[in-house]
Length: 387
Image (cartoon, rainbow, N blue to C red):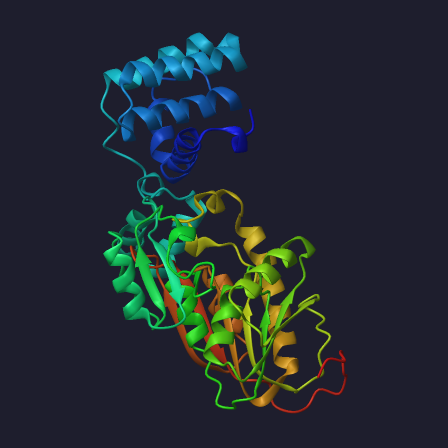
């Protein structure tokens, strides 16, 4: 049965199991592996992770957690059914291990933990790693009358509080039904973490009829916030991924961003004239290491080499952003990653006017953004034609 065909309660359970295992992967593995005489294969390994998570972190009765996991194993890999049953029985008979390796304790791959420990210190990493184990609050950017909107929501019996990093940010409980909130159909808000909002707020444009370019724009939250902040400006949203374009356009239409034009283009070769843009928001593709509380799978998707490849792409996009922006214009470079390789290292050859790194917290994601000065002089080669 496909996930979409499951009943709502089953989808919620599946979501809890998958995300819970990803958030607590290393401690769970250390827990059950004590009782494995042989290394489990991939399917048995997944079953043991799921079973151990239910036993340690959910209210599911012990006998049900074990029996249902073993039953599922029997359908998928009958030969390993007894092995999984025996290991889970041992887990139920013992407390979780109190001594864990440093990377297991913070639930990070060894290389990420070592990198962050060396860069920021073990105490800081230990502090924000606790946040990464918890589901994040829902954060919105409410475009108008934030205080009045919060009052409306509170009268509905929903907890809501203003964020501190953006005048538009509102924090709501995790799992809140966004479509049921006042103003959704009218496009009065968008889902957007306040750290990302802070990056947009770092872009200051003085010219009313400015030309603003949002590079790597999908799904459109930053574009919408730029549109609402500068309603007299002309905003160009650039996105390469053809599959993301419909959602980008639909979101901008719902939020009535009438001053935005969407173009499909490679951000490394923009169809824009040199030195013609008044402001650029570059939210570059990255390893997503700052949003692990929201996307815990991201810590398994990249290694050191992949991060360096992403940094090379980020540098290329930054160079192109500098090409199109005017010499006295605003340019903000942003990534939802806190790896130094994707932060300061990308800016080594740039004149940085300001920079901010936000570590993950209970109220916002990890993020890095910097205001960068455009390169001096005019580019001789015109790459584009949009003016």
